[in-house]
Amino acid sequence: MAKWEHSLVRPDASLLDAMAAIDRAGSQIALVVDDERLLLGTLSDGDVRRALLRGVALEDRVEVAMHRSPTVARAGNGRAEILRAMQERGLHQIPTLDDAGRVTGLSTVDDFLLPAERPEWVVVMAGGLGTRLRELTQKTPKPMLEVGGRPILETIVRNFHAQGFRRFFFAVNFKAEVVESHFGDGSALGVEIQYLREKERMGTAGALSLLPRAPEESLILTNADLLAKVDYVDLLDAHGASGADATMAVREFEMQIPFGVVEERDGAIARIDEKPVHRSIVNAGIYVLSPSALPLVPRAYFDVTTLFEKVVERGLRAATHHVDGYWMDIGRLPDYERANSDFDAVFP
Image 1 (tube, rainbow, N blue to C red):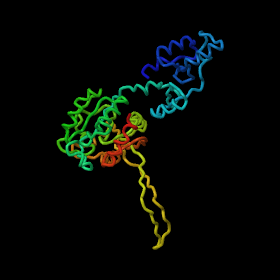
Image 2 (spheres, helix red, strand yellow):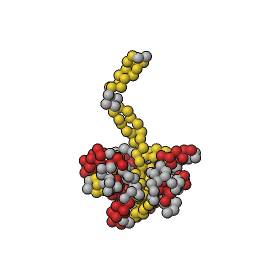
Image 3 (spheres, rainbow, N blue to C red):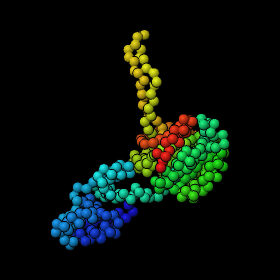
Image 4 (cartoon, rainbow, N blue to C red):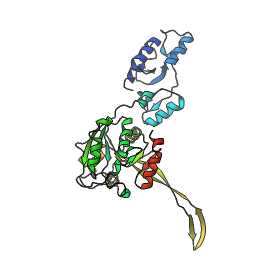
């Protein structure tokens, strides 16, 4: 919340002063703090109303009406976790505290309904050949295949836009003119798009070397053939909180072997595991990269997995962040057909 500091009041302030602070902040709540901004309690419109009904005067001190055990969030909590706490407790505001208990912010429901504009860049790797979908990609680059009546890449941009991201770089190569003709400068979608034109294929990370300048903030790198419901702000928050130089979004993948698996010992059957399910943690194709990681990318063919290996080799921190929810890598025809079937229910 932009004006949250206007909601701060001292415990010896009057209820009338607290109501004025609530009005200035537009927060429906005042945060009662001491001289060091340690949170002592909260005072909502409802707290004031209940205090007046029991005979408390507007000139009385805030501390006689404040709620002394409010629900709070900690600085390391992600947006998804804060929103979940609001939903579970029926709250419209939650103060954020540092480890010492000092107020560092105030999250409101409006922060989630009307996301603030994000400064981070989004780089989309949209130059692949789509060889596994050759029957569909002879004339159309895979990111431009329509799912749910619009190109996959457009849905990706719309999902980012809904979370406040406005600045995009598309790495393009195969059939680049199709992508550029559809999106132009991005203004029709309320975003700004620049193009990283690969003169030859540069892998899944090499085009990062074509950025016009070094970013000031961490950036998000994503594949262009993914349809996913991901909280990108939560991913960025987790990256920052972990102190990582590079973060890879990962998810659990299950694969069932369609046969009974036999364990042998000395030519005899020791055990039969009927159609077991193997679970693995897999790369979700979405990454956060700090400015510290980008100098490791050469202006050449270079894959993002190699970048993570280089990060580890240099003694930098490479982290993982688990993402849940819908995720579809449209690499094969059955995936494409499934995505079209799922679209209306997942992306209304």
